[in-house]
Image: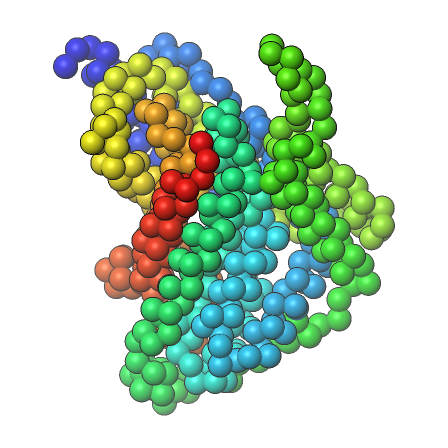
Length: 452
């Protein structure tokens, strides 16, 4: 191998090392160590810095601002109360209804944080019906993260839209792939979990806890507390904003014309700008109509979580862009042959595996997307295929290191939902792998059916 190849591998080790250190630090650490990696490539190897992910970060900031204003007005509480009523209405179907509600509300809110208030409801209904809580809780946790991949206002989708837009693949087409793939994947995961494990009344761990008096009857008033007067209005405004974004994403002709290209054809505003401006307008409307105090907004749980995500996204995406830009020729020449001709299937498989593994290490769909998708674009994978392979980002649930996993296990007093003794044998592994397998298959098939 020539010197350039060795330099590329040395830079790759820097990227892997930064991701590893960021994973160990977690949260803000992922972004900080991403910036350290950029500094090493810049000063240590003389690499020109790649494009900073400004658009994706701005989308996250505007969406988080609007969501936090809505939360300050009680909108998220109202959304949770609706989900709770639906789940309680048909308790025997909790294994299917709970994931459906978790998915839909994450899609609407753009954040998996909305899943946490649903946990006591899902546990309560399962326990009262003597249904093994693990069955509903594990699939619901997976669904809450899958919803991020299908939400027009999530950080991960913002990253994917920004990356694929130059390839002519917009938000509308991305959602046309992800929604059917994810719904079928989650349905099959729930179907598999329907009879998974011993029945609650036969489970030895539950019986031991019951005998020792360690299990208390679930008591929750989630969905029954008095909501602020503006709760419904704030949630309605936010969801209306989501609907507007989807509408502009699906129908390009609705977007304003802002100029002409070299051929004299009209140029329309990008979906990126549509998302940012729409969320800003929605936040302003909620401020005015719901009389939200600006000082209350940063105190909401959605706000700090979103800002941390934006910083993590900035650092790790900038590092990935810098690495790809510095080694684009080598990547194209070295990996391009893998995805050409008869090797196209292998190239797609390697891309999906790389996305899955990086998501596993970073526990973040956004970080994995920004680290791996640019490489997929560089080596020539079609944008529709990249969208079909995107469910691999759920590799983030392979290790029991995600906050939603920890919280889900903590809520299950029966002990049926477990973190596992051997790292990989946790309760979320089976439904997550079923989802990934089914969603990948469906997503790839849909990508082939989409017009070029």
